[in-house]
Image (cartoon, rainbow over all chains, first blue to last red):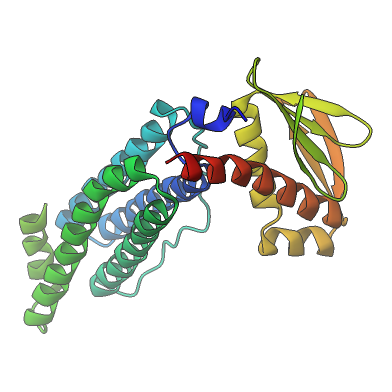
Length: 169
Length: 103
């Protein structure tokens, strides 16, 4: 039997669904970072705002990377609908803790794509996702470092903590 | 046309020469290109998710499915949604299993 699906795309169709879910996850992260930047800006944490604006752009670039990969390999990407973005935080520390939780969640989704790609024999996608695995390790560690810094500066004026955020840009 | 899979309400076929899929909805046969088939897979996966089905059951108990850039419109109840998901998933698995055997 002639395999139309394999002739049309290099990506396993179930993996393609996971990649589309990842497109949503990256765009959701981008919108969440934008909301965090807005909160920081409104509360006078200007360095932190710049940091989260940059992160919002990075997550969008990640989203576009996957979006293009699916299309460039004969698949179908779907523009993500993002809703329920939280705009309320108790403190700068709360913002960073939320960001770390979000990064961990994104990492787990990426690990799942790698594991599933390996299981179904989609070697191309597995190799493509390697870049994201490395990137996520860096992202997670960046937020852990910021939380360490906040912890070390416990008791200091919030403005001093904000000043230090430019070191993570 | 080559039969790929038959579920309770629907059947899928392929035309390898023209690289087209066909879905027999009982009262109508719809021709789909590969990308239109991917769109159907994406939509039906979303519609058959537990959270979405709960919404359907708690509201009108039917759902509208459009295909091929709104050229076709179907009204499906919950058993039909689940059956169509089953058909599309099994149709894909036939090809994926064959790829693994060839590998």
